[in-house]
Image (cartoon, rainbow, N blue to C red; front, side, top):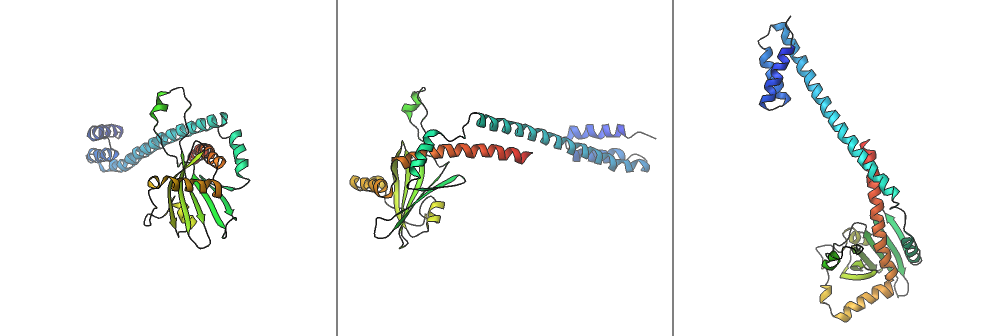
Length: 267
């Protein structure tokens, strides 16, 4: 009985010259085995199946190897982050958080942090909420800082939203930035949207009036809005510092969680 191995070598070689695909290899096998006696024809299907199985096994081994490599690197990065204790709460952050917690309720919800308080010094109580995402930072290009290579890298300003809602259903919405322990207002608007909708969109709906260009308002009006946030709402230097420091720390802890969750997923 003639061996089928020379046939395998023949069609593998022709398939490789064509395009290297296994479909071409099987086609070449059809041509080669068609000239064999009928009792050899049955070997054709078994041979093609065996080669496809080997190809699949090779693909699985390749994927498995890449998956293990990725998992190992994720584990390494996770271990380094823990070793450097970057997820530990800094003393400065813990101290300022304790101060803020005296007048604000602080709630962490995944990557989002919210601060709540109610102002009762007015005729109608005003519910205030501050919301920010740990990755909602503003990239600032400072040529002066770039020239000073030895100077410590400054933290990027953090964008956040402040809502002041009365029982009548109207909400005053501030879009702000926390920078160098101070609050800078970017925009102010009024809406009848729910606070949840405002916070989810980081501002009022795009179909509504977005408020005036804040930088073009009279200077004393800009100052009055800033004074209202600081003195009435309670968005003072401690709160602005907390937003900046907490965002930086929160982003780090979320990153560490990501590394571990990705590693577990690949196991």
